[in-house]
Image 1 (spheres, rainbow, N blue to C red):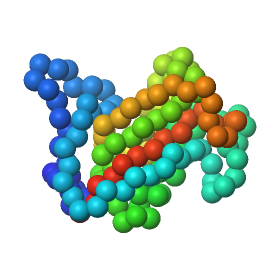
Image 2: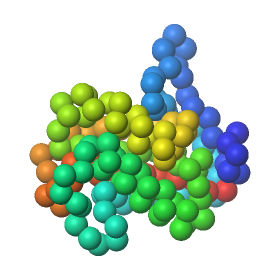
Image 3: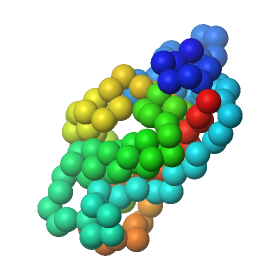
Length: 138
């Protein structure tokens, strides 16, 4: 049970090692599902600033995502799924520490189910990451 009023449980198949930084699946019960569109590392409709590191973009995109979830009446613990799109998978693999720091600064120790997808480009040419989410509210 999470501390935000939904029944939330990470699923770990027997014999599998717990993944680092995400859950293979989650089970949740609540009253309303919120689907958050992909969020970029920008303020409002402004373009993504040139020169931001992948970690900085990751943090800003997560902050925007959390802002949307809170506007819908939820909080971090209500997030049950993240889908992240990155334009450079090699940069993601080498920048894991920066992404981890961004995660800790925004989501703390909350690890929803997550999918990571490599793409050739995003809507903003300066964007290197876009993150969408699903949240379940009580």
